[in-house]
Length: 345
Ligand code: NAD
Ligand code: TYD
Image (cartoon, rainbow, N blue to C red):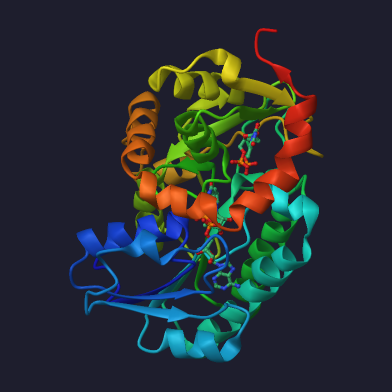
């Protein structure tokens, strides 16, 4: 099937969005790309370096909550991929208002304008976190939504608004729910980049609780290929889970990172657990696999490549870490690290 001539990518200056911009830019030379991004603390134009100057790519700074900005961004676009969101669970525990605003109201605004414009496809990028913590089962797309924190609750709101628009107005929506992504250009406050860069800086690694919480780890490029496929082949009104099957406890991932950089386990400090911390995320992705998708990147190799990317792109993350992030880190971790227990002691 032919790809769209022109697409809108919201949140395209963030981690997965920028990887998706690069992915489509490289694979679909006929496609024009508009990026709409509010450039919050998580958005970074450096993530799009080398791409933004191309005449095929247009960048608009603006919020998905702002109907006028959205309308301007939709100009000429046949499809939209909505990555724009507030995404960090820890921040949502501290303050949930901006999450509700962007992830629910922003998604609504985007849906309304997409419907008015008559787009061919609206791809809503969602998360496995909407199902809540698994007690051993792999969630399927019909599993109940049982979000465990304000971030995942706000993502549920966005997903359900998509469902409502499809049902009410026939908006051609597909919703995807992916597991935890990793790869280049991920913000340093997320688990893998934080642990890699702290190791590189000679700092401690703050591991929540007993470190036995499990996540399914998906290399970001495998997420991109799934989104491209779902946009083309997915049925409107349907939900698709995207998972790698590479489930690991956090303690194991921290160990791999330390080993690959030649640092000792004693750099791990067990700190007070995250409030309401979901123990396990697990999904069944067979509905997507039936469309012909499978993850192509091996976990160990991709993690190694990701660690190398952060080692080789020190300037990128040092600039992020030296800004407002420093205050966030002090506020969130300082006391907890003082009271923490060093691994092996
Ligand atoms: P991110 O935080 O790195 O990027 C989010 C981007 O959205 C940033 O560029 C930010 O500036 C932008 N943004 C925030 N509010 C906005 C608004 N009101 N209007 C326009 N732009 C706004 O997030 P990410 O990790 O790249 O996640 C992208 C999407 O994928 C999110 O919807 C997230 O829920 C979903 N997701 C992420 C993961 C993961 O592991 N990172 C897993 C599953 C699903
Ligand atoms: P995170 O990257 O915040 O993603 P999510 O909470 O959306 O899964 O965290 C991934 C896992 O790593 C999660 O179980 C929480 C844990 N974690 C820590 O142990 N320490 C940290 O400093 C962070 C940021 C996360």
